[in-house]
Image (tube, rainbow, N blue to C red; front, side, top):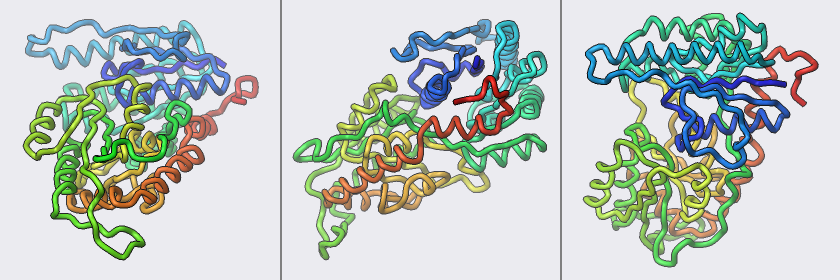
Length: 407
């Protein structure tokens, strides 16, 4: 079976370090494990190609360069991305395929074009409400084009696989009649193995964070919580011991990733007196080892903005589970359906840094709790959240012919 995987968003390098890049690679791996012959069609290939994808066929068509000084450069840039996506669609049609799988982007009509020409099954993967996201965080000039592309692709697809219930609802509001499917993210439990047990350092604990350093990840709150956990302001009850005591050591932070907020976070850590290591961008294969050097992992997402759904399906949390990390996370969006409080992690209210600090202190004071949470987290990742399972839910909704059906 020949699968054409389309990723026309130049902000998502196929071989990159972002979570979106990891997602692309893992879905491709899942297709290949299912026996498919995959060709990726993209506008940005990236340079961090993993060894196991060295033989992956990639067709890259970069958008033409636009002079950033032109007053209309934003509109021209969107037009250039659309042109590149249309050229990718022509390549898919010319090469032929048995299935089209496209990661939704704002200006790519590739899925619809391929379906109209080749009459093959197609899946559209939607990871975020990109139209509103682009308007809120960046700029969207040709709204009508973006809306037309979404509607055309969603109606042409046999299934629109969305990573969360809010994204499902967003697609259904914008494209009534679309065949939607809930398909949350997963994790590669072979790439990310369990951390060894025991302390990483005799006199301190380290809490790890993986992700792009942008405001919606809540890293400033994590730094504040660590500062509180190291003070005498937050007591912790040692479970089962019937007494209050503080952790046996101080907490430090390891920030795995990079982004526009790094300088501000470095200044914040220094101002709070928090020992923090910033690794910068690292290839996905380096993440497990860096996590294994930590004693816990954090997902400190902030209080939701009123009137806006928390639509994310956080890859980092699945990776923490696979790494066997004791997790402290805020109970927002999809997280309470992934992390079971008291069993695979500790959940705290969003925006409550005191509660987050108390959870860290609790972990620091209770070795057995850390080990139990980590063991159960790993078991959940292995049993519930494989990428093969994600893909099987999507392909089950495709009208695959018997001769190209997945094994």
